[in-house]
Image (cartoon, rainbow, N blue to C red; front, side, top):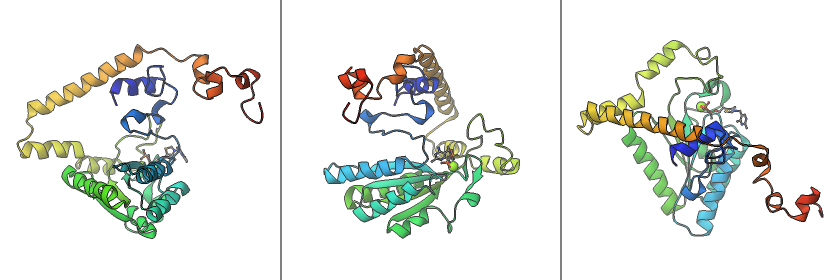
Amino acid sequence: MEMGPCMAELFGNANGCSKGKGGMFSYYAPNRNHWGCHGLAAAQTPLAAGLAFALKQREIPGAVVCFLGDGAVNQGVYHESLNLAGLFGLPVVYLIENNGYAMGTSVARSSSFKECLARRAEGYDIDWGRCGDGDLYELRAKVWAALERARHEKRPTVLEVETYRYYGFTVADANAKKYRSPEEIEERKKRDPLDGWRRHLQDEGILDDTAAENMDLAAKAEVKAAVEFAEAGRPLGIEDIVADVYWESDHDTPASRIGRHFFGG
Ligand SMILES: Cc1ncc(C[n+]2csc(CCOP(=O)(O)OP(=O)(O)O)c2C)c(N)n1
Ligand SMILES: [Mg+2]
């Protein structure tokens, strides 16, 4: 996806990727096989199982990757999805981004588990693995192995990646420094995956300071251009709110004119 329509979606403007109606929870680009972010924690997990089922049933080559947070792993639908993925042999990879906190609640206070969250997959006869966020080569190899298993053996995988977020859940999360200690945050920063990877690539001779700084400047310029794109967008009006909800309303059918869409209208 391009950053402009994503930024415009955050601004709630009509040039957003979901016409400005979804906001941060609704990045969506089915034409690029991106089936959306979801406002309900774990709502993406049965959708991923369904997409994987469709791939298998229609014999379409490929696999589904479904990202979820540590705050989604205790939702019922996630476990229903794992059960069906294991039972039907679905080509799906569930990738848990475990950053230790669901909003302000730590994993230790929210999950009953042994050693790691991914291990629960054993109960569904699903292969699982885990790794940190520091070594991208390791992460890539694990994701690749899971994708190959999905594509060729039609078997699901649960992968857990241990990571972190330094800031609050949102700008409204005023307690971001209260539910963990400043020391914990500073300690984790020493293992920051972006800094670490930059050093790694420099050690390998792939990147030098100038190239790294140019990448940084290019990223900042892309963000600035995205903001300008978003600001140029039209704010939504009343007519936008009711559009794309019912086919009948959009097509001015008799049912829509009398206001009854169902039950014999
Ligand atoms: C079913 C459901 N319950 C509650 C919420 C409110 N909520 C939004 S984000 C969140 C925590 C999500 O935790 P995690 O997936 O670990 O995301 P992180 O905080 O790491 O960004 C909750 C409880 C929600 N979106 N959906
Ligand atoms: Mg989390």
